[in-house]
Length: 408
Image (cartoon, rainbow, N blue to C red):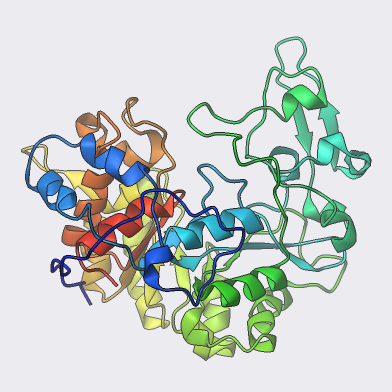
C-alpha cells in the first residue's frame, strides 16, 4: 500500500546532535531519537521550492523511529560497518530496521559481514597475527600493479574472528606496507568513530536488535568458497541456519525481512519457512539496461511463486522524462503493476553528489549537481514510486524525511 503523506502535528523541540550515551535505550521516549545536523545541511542545499519549504517546516519537530528508515550495515557512512557501534548509531538516528549481512566462518558460525572475503578492507586483520591465515597475503604495490590481499571469514574460526576490530571499509591501492593499505577511507567519510569497532556474530546482532527494539533484515550473502562447504554444508543448510537463529531467539517473523540476491534462497524460505518467507526480500543486482529488462521479465514468475517484496538499487526505479523531471522507471511501474512492495538501496553512499552521484544516481545523472539531491531522489522514490522503505548509510536523513511526511 502506498504511504499517506500528511504533515504531523507541530511538536515542541528537536535535539540537533546524536546522543553521546554509550547504549541506546529502546524503552526511552521518542525524543531520544536524533538525526544530528546532516539532514538540516542537506535541506539548506536544496534550491528554493516546495520540497525545501516542506522540509524546513519540519525543523522544530522531535523525531520518531520509522521502519521506512533502514540502517544499511548500521550507519556505515561514518561508523565501521556491521559493528555494534554502527548499529547503535543507526538506532539513535531512528532507523526502524537494521541490517546484518550474514556469512559464515571456518567452523560454520554465522557472522555479520558484507562479504565473506572483505576482512582485509573492513577489519584490522592485516595488522594482526591472523594475517598469516588469509587466503591471499598482503602484496605491496609494485610495477604498476595495485596492492592486494584477500582475507575471508572462512579463513578463521569464530573465536579468531571475534579478536578482530572493525574499521572503515577501504584500502590504499598504492600501499607498500599493510599499515598503509589499511588507511584507505574515502575522503567523504571519516575515521573519527573508527577507534573501536566491535564485530558481531549473527546471534549477537539479533540480541542487540531486540534490545534496541528494531526490526531485522538479514541478508544471506553469497559464499566465496565452493558450496557445499566442507562436503555437507549446503546452500539450503546455510539458508535454514540463518532462520533458525531467529526462531531460537524467539523473534517474531513479522519483524524479520530476510534478504538474498539468490532467488532460490527466497523460494526456499517461502516453501520451508513460510512465516519468514512471506516477507522475504528479493534483491535485484541491476547494473545496466539489459539487466533491468531481464528483471522486469522475471517479475511475473516471482509473483506466481509467492515473492512479495523486491529490492532493486535506487537508480533502477527512476528515470528522466522529456522535460528532465525525475519519474518512476519502467521497472518501478512493472513492479507495482504486479503487486510487489518495493524496498531500495542505498542512500547516502555517493559522497557529495558534485560528481553526478555515480552508480546510485546513474539514471538521473544530468540533473544531479549537489548534496541536496539526496532529498530530491528520496522524495520521488517515496511519493511517486511508492517505496516501502530505503536502506541508507546515514539513517538520520531518511528518518527526518519520513517524520516530516508522516511515514511510519
